[in-house]
Length: 239
Image (tube, rainbow, N blue to C red; front, side):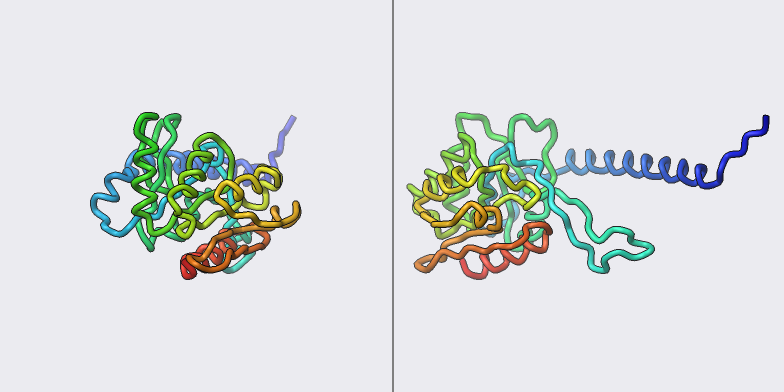
């Protein structure tokens, strides 16, 4: 028998091969970039500006966010948005304002892309975090839960660092990740008693307290990097 193979199936196979090859190259490039990533200590040694400290629970390290593309869907650009790492997006937004640093998890085999990290053992990480937070021009805190987060919220309260803080909530796709009760307890722990309802919690992008002024709550869809960029620029201007 004679077997005819559709040219469309050949095209589909070629596309799959190209996509797999591109994914493989992208994976190698990401590994290379992570291996060459500068540590927080190295960056702070050469950049004399006050640091921007990024605080979060380690369980929130892999959050994703969409970045809207300028031109929307076209023939050459069939997507209107691409998925990016949440932390990397925040680092890109704030990177020009000062060195952005964070403590890294001991579970990381290679440094992560995004915020520059220092890996400290359990005996010294609190001293390092304390020094950074005192020196910081700004503290960006992704609201979450966990033992490390509990210490950091107590430290912000006890050291009167609330006026430096911008609190971010996770992107909209993670609705329900932290129940409203946890969010309320989080803010109560830093002496911010905000009377919001359950739905309002899911709408909050960012929250900050101006030094000697009011508390600002910014709400939105939380779908795109642009939502967080607007919130962060407003907060940085206010602080």
